[in-house]
Length: 150
Image (cartoon, rainbow, N blue to C red):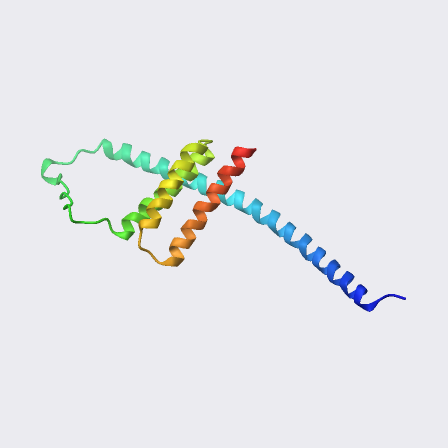
């Protein structure tokens, strides 16, 4: 004669195993999407860099008359970089680290991420934004560690 409590436990275990199986499949799919997205992001960054180089080369051939050349005013010693400038620097560092990672320069990427993380810590921005970027940094750090193992 089956014990109702034991049957209930077995059913619950079966449900949990099915749920775990589903979660594993979803995790695998998300990992595949993550890799695809990372590759697309790298391709995009490469295209942006190429377009920037091409534009710079095109502009190099154009000379401006002397009266159109103006010097930027020197920043005063009391001016502090604005949070937007720091965030732009952090984002540029994160992209640079990502590009180095994809080119196999794990140590260079790790050093840049450490710098970006330090600068982000000194930047006054919304907690949401800081958390999102910290997650991006941790994600790339994890990718670097995994790549170094394999």
